[in-house]
Length: 518
Image (tube, rainbow, N blue to C red; front, side, top):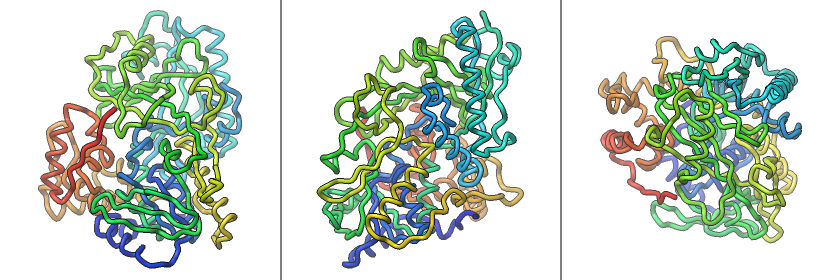
């Protein structure tokens, strides 16, 4: 099944206002979804594609919570194989195949993962890891992901390691293990693409609309931009608020896990063409990755630490987390990275269910659906980015069954997102890499006004045309929406203000916001 057209999927301020106005009537919608991250937009797309009438509300921007602070990887589940958690590993392999093959091939690409074999990796551990990679490849084959997309793992020589990752330490290097996984061009862009596809199928996507209270058949909402209050009547309600899900239901207890990441310049690591994997000492099957990005950056992550207290709107690694990440990755580098090499950082939180596990890494990543006994609201918790579609399918199945709703069969395993498909020849390659077939719409802005083709600043190849596309098609409402989620240049502290100034110049209608950092 092909992707939706860009016009049908255009989300912008005018559509947002119309969607809010349409809710003034007394007629109940089939479903209200609370939360605009992967779980929420996933439910919205599954439900809309099945013919349900629904509204998604998000108190901030799409992907403004955990969903924009991930490692940008569509994992095949190797870590779960190491823990003998075959069901989650299998689900990850299957869903990764759907994402890379049919759903979003323009936003998720093959990535080589290199594990250098040096003195810190014993021969026994290397043998076990190679067996794990082989088992992961069996799951790939069973999931029917072709080896032309994700080649088989292999053993490579020390010379190959040096060529692929020039900054790798040479002392004691005896080769490496090379495997393949999926890498997102950007997690926030994927969330926006899912939301736009849901909108093309009739879903109302309303950002900056906070759910203030929930009753059995309605959700009370405050427009964060105007202060106006609305009530949405609904036959079913899904709470997909992630790490904030427990604020809407007293019966949900979460144990959030913090995942921290550092950003360094790719040139500092010799412009690696692969993700370098460093094992965490004393934790077999757990790794820190140094993952190359398109924008001349390498992301180093991630931690897996319990978090106590309120969840900040914008979190960063603390000193201990920075030290941990640098220490682990430096063990495989010829020249150690220092805190001065860090040009940006971010942290996200996983909404894990509270259990008796000794640490965050022990808590199950399996998703769960919890029914509130007072309101009947269905809460989604747990799960992984790669499995968002399956989690959404399960939630919509439960909604349809409980509410006695009429719905078509689920079709989202083959439903391409906006931008999926073959772009017309002659479009700029850098636009195709980020927008797929929507690159044609972005390029049209520059064709009408050549000044919009100019980069916002030397070294930042982000253009006015992309800013206008974000405003008129991707529901960017604030300056921060553009610099932090429609593009990721805002993650580099030194570039942030220059980018913000360019966004203000090209889109003066955008609202200024600030978020408290943690």
